[in-house]
Image (cartoon, rainbow, N blue to C red; front, side, top):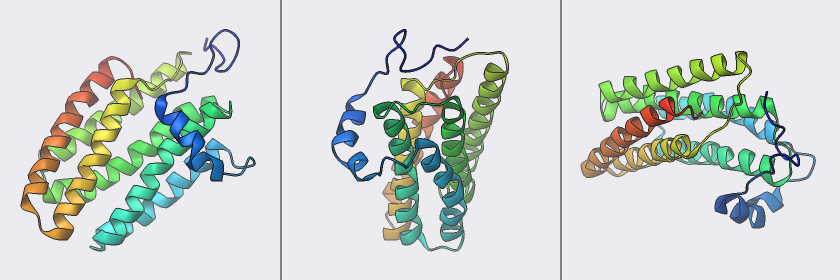
Length: 197
């Protein structure tokens, strides 16, 4: 049985990034906006990001990807700082991230960086989703840990470096993004075995 987050048994732990966001961007978000609504926006905006990248509009695609990726930081921090953590959010927030990353990897990484790395990344994400579903079905708690967060940061960083390399024709950036994706695969494997979503 999951301990209720925010209860006396297990208080919500705020990270340094939560505290920074609380003093900056979260102040701009009205009280009636919930973290789950922000997660839904990521699901809805992902096809828009993909359409831009698929059609070669890389500058706008990069901007859109950055904005949509940033909603991941916003919804989690909003949930923790306003005590609005939900079981739905614990499952679907990381699922929205994996959908965004998985689709971008499918569209771009296989084409510009490394075909095999792209499919390994997607395969690991699918395994983590399956593990999350099984853990939830068996009554386990779904929580992200540091390995999963590092993996996500590396994936977003890798995509941004890759897009900059494509836009400005910097071949060295594509090599750098390849290394970043390889590192994200390593953290993805750790994330899978330590059960982080």
